Length: 140
Ligand code: RTP
Ligand code: MG
Image (cartoon, rainbow, N blue to C red; front, side, top):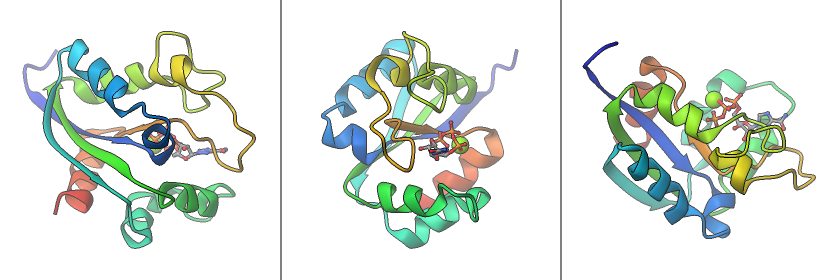
């Protein structure tokens, strides 16, 4: 187990913002023992979303995903702590909020709304390389 402090990019997505869940998500991150290193609220632009979601280009949910993510304000947070990349993904739960376990952010606070894309409240980077790449896009 590494003693090295990691950074991860968390986004409280526009559905989370609209539903007033930003504070609840930040509360869970802090309660877990991670630190909020930087934070900004903004409506993400399509150009940077295309960079952020480049791995999903061409998939059926890609266009609905960019439409959803650019639909209103979201909160971008750099989170710090030992093993926080893995730790936050576990806090977030499974991608599909219907299948996400109770106790997780998506499992406790999310559900299927019948949309073309899964609206699942939060994003969390999936590796150290993704985290640095994504933080570079949104906190340039
Ligand atoms: P994230 O990147 O947001 O932390 O979520 P993730 O790793 O669990 O999911 P990923 O596979 O990277 O997909 C990115 C986001 O695209 C939306 N999605 N919708 N079939 C669908 O409707 C579908 N599949 C993916 C979700 O918002 C997912 O978080
Ligand atoms: Mg992902």
